[in-house]
Image (tube, rainbow over all chains, first blue to last red; front, top):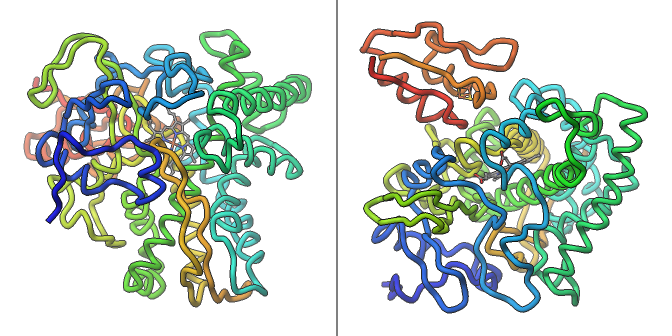
Length: 413
Length: 64
Ligand code: HEM
Ligand code: SF4
């Protein structure tokens, strides 16, 4: 029996996410006893932890009452952290209607199910190449050698960024999303890491914008560089932020779903055999992988007016933290939520959020994951861990930084 | 019951068409159109499912 108590559980300390992964037991306790819980601890600003599926949907579908803000997520107070209310970028995630819709409209047609279909062949080819890179060896770091490669290559190709610059994008994107992890931040403070990464990103994107204004192409960089919001070109800071958002958001999350998905299969060999035997399960399997791994841990909202949520009195100005992986294990919505079942259907997970800010890249991520797991199921003949996984130090995005594996992979058919 | 799709939100994810075929239709502009604005009450369950599943929460089911 666990002796967890509401008053003493910790769900924000990033070190806990390194040592034991997601606090599923704590979240289960919160869902059971207080799906909207006033979290007050000495090391973090007070906020409402929203852990129930129904409550997260209720908040997300009312952007006028629960607005998005600069402060994207909750973490502990740490020396050298930036002012959380300043925000390092100004982009979709901290905008609100009607501005938000106007900005989202600049590129959203490229991300609809129809919009991403044109990328299918490219994604198949990149995936095959990535897996070809494993042939002739028996050991690798699955994160660096596989998971990280596909999303980065895809978004970079969409942007029209040349291959020689992909490593820089990888490094900067890690710094932006995992600045509190020493592997990405080095000896710099979180604030310094973020500012360094932002500066380098902006310099790079600025050159890209200048080029695409002179020589427009059919790529994402051109669409942004020449895009309009309410009839005007995007202001420079918002434009640079948009580039950074699309590079970063498309990278870490899909990488972690890929790694976490394979990790789940290693721990559930019956499900792996099931997928190999019946590749038509791939789309369902991908939904289950996304539910199971829920790579985005949390996003904040701020109450605009006094209101009530699940019987709790919320005051204007209160912070609410939506905890997606918890919603995706909600007993009220999913049968056997703690089972990894690749045939799960229906699977109304909200790992991509819901409503106004529903993940712009959801269809792209789905397509990448489907292609990746279809090819893996076809070519991977054996796989096992070859050492412990290493998790990222973050309470925002759940990351596996390294996953050493031993494997047997078929050469290309 | 009356159904409205907010075209400022809809991004052609098509979940509505899966949940309630014949009531919604995805057109070339990547938006969902309501084929039957006032469907019979017997279809209410399907329509509400569509509204619940819509990733952008773009579907409103009104009572009149
Ligand atoms: C498995 C992979 C992914 C997961 C779990 C994920 C998760 C999320 C979540 C939960 C949100 C909602 C934020 C909120 O409600 O405040 C979001 C927003 C967003 N995601 Fe993703 N994402 C993934 C992949 C991608 C990819 C591949 C892209 C590609 C560009 C992307 C781009 C974005 C953008 C631009 C937003 C902001 C949308 C807005 O505020 O309107 N994501 N994502
Ligand atoms: S499910 Fe929602 S977003 Fe998707 S097509 Fe239907 S109305 Fe539009």
